[in-house]
Image (tube, rainbow, N blue to C red; front, side):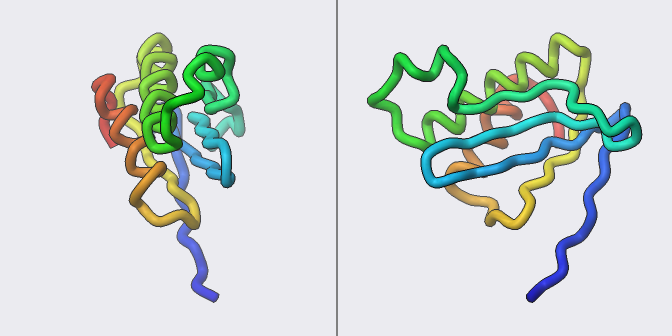
Length: 106
């Protein structure tokens, strides 16, 4: 089995950690030096329950936009993207595109 690299974020460039299940997607922005989650967002939030007709990829994009807007309120401009063991396509790519749409950089 291939060993994964450790990706660390700090206060200047916090880490975006992504978890994807079969139905939902979760993302959080973490400051690894203090060990605290700064903001988080998921597809289980109330505003996403109204849109039952959206695909999982469209929903991941919306989660990324929501996470990006929350991060912008905290004056975060640059991030480190930690996709974990997931390939960078589909829902993971869509989430990253949603974060970039708000104006944050990886």
